[in-house]
Each structure stands twice: as C-alpha cells, then as structure tokens.
Length: 138
Picture 1 (cartoon, one colour):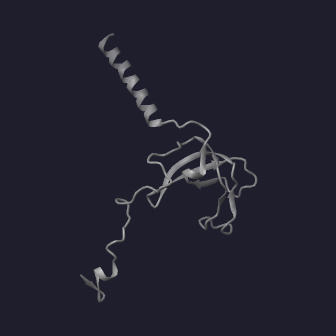
Picture 2 (picture 1 turned 90 degrees about the vertical axis):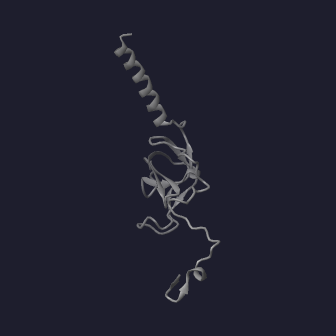
Picture 3 (picture 1 turned 120 degrees about the vertical axis):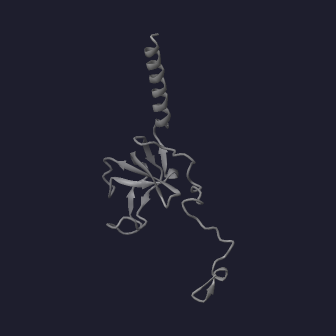
C-alpha cells in the first residue's frame, strides 16, 4: 500500500513490537494480580519525586519522603499496563501533597494482603448454605 508517496513496508519495521491494550503485557515490576488492597496500610520504600506530572512544583522535588506510612485509596492503571496505587499519606508535614501515585516496588505492606473478593464469596457461600437449610426445614 502506498500512502503519501511511501510504501508501508518502507516506513514500518516488521520486527517492531507494537503495544496496545490487547497485546500489551504487564510491567515487569508488577505482580499479575494486585499486591495491595484498598484500605491496606503501606510504607513508602523510596522518595517520590515530581516527574513532571504535578504542575505546582519543579521536576525533581521530593513529593513524599521514604518511610512515610499511608493507606491505599484506589488501584488504577497507567497506559493500561502499569499498575498505580493511589496512596493517602496522613500527617506528613514535610510533604507537598497528601495523595501520591505509587508503583508496587515502591511500597511495603504493613498489613497482610486480604483478598476481599474471596472473603466476600466465602461469606455468601456460607449464607446461601444456611438459607438452603432453613428452606428445607432442617
């Protein structure tokens, strides 16, 4: 196919791997499933510095110091392949902000991981079994 005087094969290297939401794989630093859950207490392992995404201070400014303790507020994704945890740090006077996006390798769990979905499924299963016994007259 020729477009604007160029043949497609002459401008696209066939050995280049293209990434999109279908073919992209998870970042090498992330677990397959989330490592932390919403509400879990975590400790920051290294300083979080402004990489240019926060417009109210210069690039390289420490946003949150290492050792700060916070709580996972939300789990999201950047570019659909990099897991980012929204962490709320409370009472850190030296910090410019309270909420920071962190990667898994930047955090340490202060509480054990609790699979909330599995916990809820176990509760529902017990409830249904109890309900079936009541309906059967046991």
